[in-house]
Image (cartoon, rainbow, N blue to C red; front, side, top):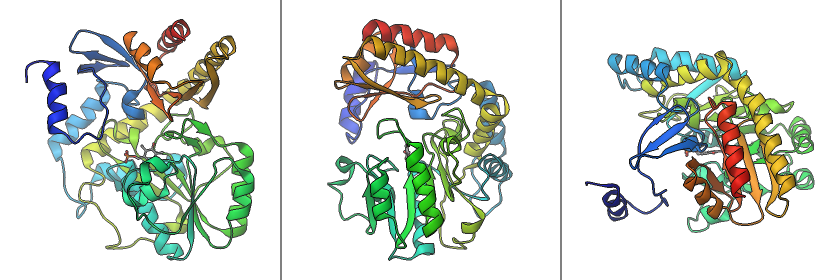
Length: 390
Ligand SMILES: *Cc1c(COP(=O)(O)O)cnc(C)c1O
């Protein structure tokens, strides 16, 4: 394995081809930049798909991980780990909910929530999710997903799950009733194309919840931990979810996910009902404590709110100049979608030629997920390049 060419060839030979890889070999990262082995410096507005909130090479993060590495890497959940408890306390504080179950990923935290719901509500009650929703790839989470292309070859899926159209008030009113056990929602859909829930839609959902008492689950795997300029995307609405699911950025780049539940549902799962060998790994939790301290404690979240507004309003300016190219700009904070009138794979390549990394989702939506530490100059640089290539 001498040069990059070999690596890309061997990747095809050795790995099951479930990912279409970007043809760049990364040597290292620093701040908001990724450096490739051929000497290029990329502005990373993809940030490991909303994972690398603190960018790369964050000194505090490295120190926290190092300190925990020296104590122990793993204990097993038969033991109490102090870092895990400290992180749970912070998550409870910032979410306003009451208890935590730690997993290793988003999809696993979703699985825990599905088990909680089935145990509480029983097998008869239906679970509602929405069109274009994304909740993960394992069977329970996949069954909740709203994109046929991810599901259609993998039946049978979990029964009694019904998908309604996102942001469609009539469908909510018609389909949510006494037989509804739970509703899963991303208040801002990620994979689904950076679509924001309308206020009327959320208000209707809240009114129906008051009437029928179903469990409201906020999937904050992508939108949580400051990404939208508030701790969680649901904080943009007047709503209190019963269950909150987080993952992507919470482990600072290490695998970690969590299900956070309110008092009412904190005793549904009991001894032996659920578990995970690695869930809540102490090194991941140590990293998580640093992420929380930096994002919530050191004001990064306020920067995200202000700079996010600046970013979005300037993208809208470009849209007004190029309405034939850009059909919509939407999002909150540093979770932004630019919908094109064409597929976005071409423009993603143009960005890459200009040493900017950004993602394309839902076929025609440029998904912009900058590290939360990004500065105004990074955003203005992106805007200039975008203006030039569109
Ligand atoms: C990424 C994602 C998941 C799945 O998380 P994994 O860690 O990849 O299993 C679930 N829900 C949402 C909203 C996501 O963006």
